[in-house]
Image 1 (cartoon, rainbow, N blue to C red):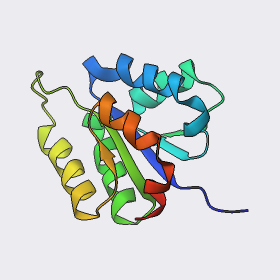
Image 2: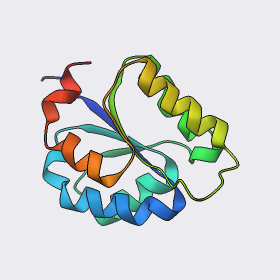
Image 3: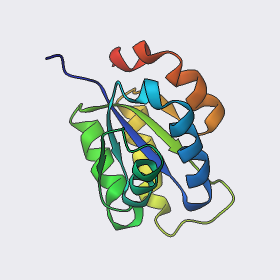
Image 4: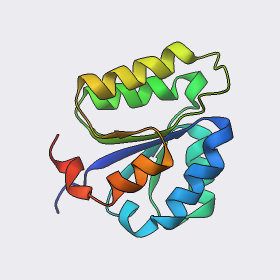
Length: 130
């Protein structure tokens, strides 16, 4: 059995509805990935699209962002979809910045909003090139 590429799903609180809508709209394409998500985001995606297999990690502020960062550093996660809320201060902003830094450092496809995520998911081969 071929190993499926892994994709991380993360969303700030005010962007969780947008990420759930993205998962519903792209359920068929997302089904081709091993999905990892931070705690609350993962739970919301599972509730909306129960046929997707999502590994839930800790909530972002409780270490979930760092868990995803570790999976990126290990080469396991091949893409990151992180719906960022640029208007709300985040108490764990350093973790968010560290996660994005690892995405850049390991040169994985990374979408920070719905428009870019739509483009990225339309080209799943992009996740195989890293």
